[in-house]
Image 1 (cartoon, rainbow, N blue to C red):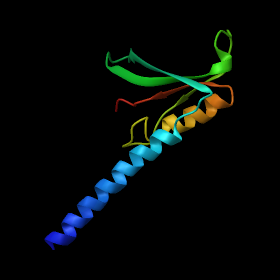
Image 2 (image 1 turned 120 degrees about the horizontal axis):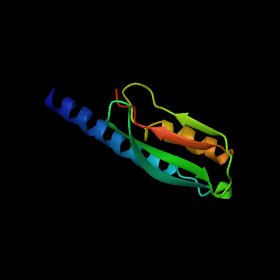
Image 3 (image 1 turned 180 degrees about the vertical axis):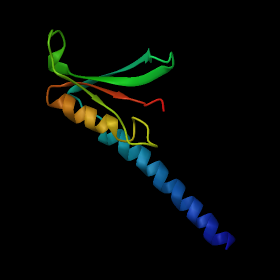
Length: 101
């Protein structure tokens, strides 16, 4: 049993590490600039997020924008950044947020 438990733990660590490396490659786009942002909520807590802007859109006054959030139990880096990047590539300004609660 100890060997099986140790193997399962090691296997879980391998999957976790490979998922982190895979997600870094997946969320990268040479066409999109990402900027970290944070602001206070109505309850005075700090909300962390990322702002995504297509490189060709800098300096344009009016651009459609979309706020992207993540599923319950996740953080913005797991899914919201992927959608925000892909939408920014299509010409939207996007913001992915870590939901406070």
